[in-house]
Image (cartoon, rainbow, N blue to C red; front, side):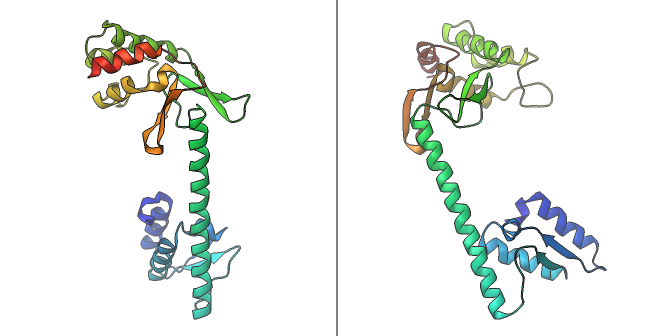
Length: 218
């Protein structure tokens, strides 16, 4: 939906505010115009309603039956290519995860560096790595009796990123934080049917500590 593209919304709003002028909107590539066929047709209609002409550096728009047909074919081909590329990316990510490499956004306490085997690998990032380890081990050993105590500990650390502008962290964020096996050096992905397995990266806590955390959460 073009309403989810902030740049496109801003462009259409600008045209709405300049109804007394006729604009030509230029796109450097047809693929930049729309992400799928349905969106392409809707967006063309929106520009037409605003009397704005469309020009593209690698495609000539023609308001003829033949021109509209070719335009639709090009848009459909772009959608197919985008979805195929997306599928390939997901397949590569899943394969890498199966090998033990973390493929998502880096967790707090880690950073990505180039791996000798290709791609990137997680490594501990200080001082956050030590803060994360202390919070997790603290809950595993009972030093922190509740999730609220873990939350207060992390909120007391200026270096630790917070959820809210007032410097607090959401309770749900703490629950997810405590449940992550990545901190014990393991990876998994239920949605991709990748079972829990030892990762290539170094854990900040032991797997035994992670199991104790899971037991305490239950």
